[in-house]
Image (cartoon, rainbow, N blue to C red; front, side, top):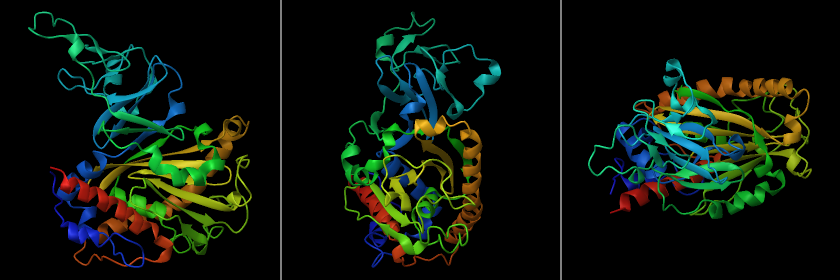
Length: 401
């Protein structure tokens, strides 16, 4: 059993709806003991996004990613399936790399910067070699070690599930399947054909200086849109926000923000920059969908594209943030795609320039002796939903024996 350093009774006050819930205890945003509890209670047994399937289309293609401090390999195996496993060599703990002709300088690259294609993985320390599914194939000079059998050595594997083209992994190999708990979100996204969309290379910002939950909360609530983003978010005012119902067992929270006209966009023109997604209705072209596959995959769907963020906690008051757009393949093939994408990214930067310092200041405020447990408004009704999801995990972890 792992026990929350904050009494469950206090945490439960944050569950429910905006009508009756209060904010989470301020210490959940900075306390080291609570962070350690949360990493096990939430991230140790929930489905974590590790990429998109089109990033590893062929056998031997791999991604090397870091999730809550664990170096992982996401691999397309020889039979076409996707395998996720620890990158930690089972000899002395060095992280394995692709078995290619790497220079000494390459060896120093952090494992989360790697991607490519390989037939095997090799520990650069003592040259132990593993196949695409993590089975040890070679271990030099181990024949004299009594009882050592290569067949007994395997890189630890995680549970894997695909949903709408996203790859999820879970440290709990017996975890409850994810997809059945995303049925409501599937229904909302039917016409977006998310599985067929293609991601551009994600950009990762390390050491973002505020707690991971602050990032999730800021992304999902629409109360601040017409206030903090006055002017640049006027095409989609907060008054046009609404959220889907949340029930215990749901794995996602999501909502909608109507735009004043069809095909709005997060850029200075307030208009979509790419062709509309072909399957969407006119109603869908006049709104934005914001979704969280808890704990930390954030998605936004607009008339011409979608974008996804991954929030990876790196400490009580820091996280790494990865972000990328996804498009139909036909959009990526347009001759002016790169130039237009650059304009779209710069447009989103206008919002980030307002959000980031606000979130840093919120982190500072939550560490104040005067930090509140405030009430919620209807335009941030998703936040007590997120709280309810978290408290379910806190309680479940505390109840384990």
